[in-house]
Image (cartoon, rainbow, N blue to C red; front, side):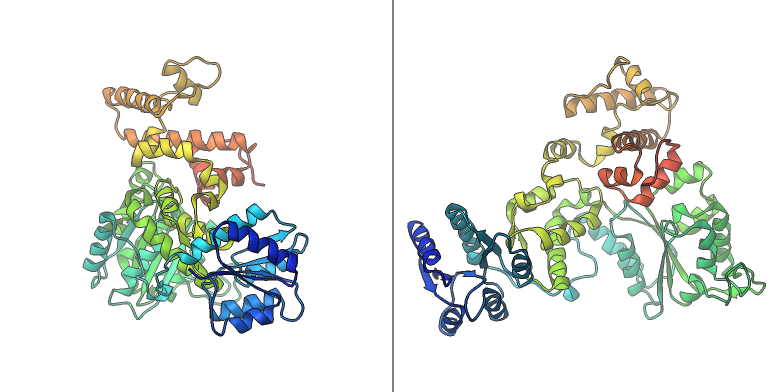
Length: 509
């Protein structure tokens, strides 16, 4: 093992570190200036470099920049004054492993150097550039089925409906379907129908003629025209207003449409791929989605698995996102320890792949060191471990299992269902274990099934969502944005569900 280099113009600092590291049986080599250290790099390299920032001549930041340019994988610990915020920030921007603030505790300094030493001794594999990775990652059987479906559809122009939870990668699959289709050289146009106000969505889809409405000073081509001969991806199709569903059905049926305010039909040669995280069959039954449009869209159905159904893919995805994030920020790629990878694989991650990507971006920016341990993960993930263990024991049916205290459809509010399950009308009962939840669920489901009720899963799921959102709103004093963050869902999602479930008491911040 190579020695640890100490660079500091203060002889006392060098002496203290030398003695402390010698007690740990770690070899050292000391330099009084950055210039001396740079000269030594011409013939030798250290295992870890510890350098003061403020020195005569070459500063520690100059030394850091030169070292990272020629030895990007070498851990560099910088020593800086406690109040020198600018130096600390500049150190991290320059690629420092960590910094020691003066005056520092010698035991903590040795522990930090040991951590950097372990990092340096790890053999690193060369990561492929993000551009060289596959467009969709996954080795789990559930993802292999998706890949097979994309392959079978590669030479087809048939309409596809992609379903799956939020964050599972529906747009990525839509882009892959386009890329491997005969229309690959033509435009791919994506539109999130839930993100555009109802009054503007019609014009966004079909365009408008000049003077069609106030502010329409020129003719504008809509997304259908922009996607001519290519593919139009309609995300969150379940949120499309009912009256616009009729116009979309006409395009799919007849192959033409009218711009807003127009009188001449416009021919549309467009392949439509739609996606939704909602249960369209239930929305049809509820009268919120046209049945004929549903059948027009549901020619080929492609369901994307949640991350809970493909946990074996989490290490692959983490490596990819860490490389991608480091490439975007121009820093060295961080790695996850085996324990941290196992911990992540046990999390529920309701935001699926999107949440995992955001987590990797956070790790790249905020986690200390190059090897990320469990303790380096965001606090909200590590503190939730007891709940996660229970959720893991419930498996993929966690939402249904969590609905055990929900009332039957004929019951009133949540507390009525709890009383009906044998609890009093006082403080809300709290199940003592996962088994209590499961037992209540089985009893409730058995009653509903014995009564001949259908769609039991959907009914309990809606009641579960309602209870969760009401509880979150109570904890956030009605602030729905805060409630959405606490629940791990999007702002648009909680707004839509509040309206669908008839929940009162929500307010915008």
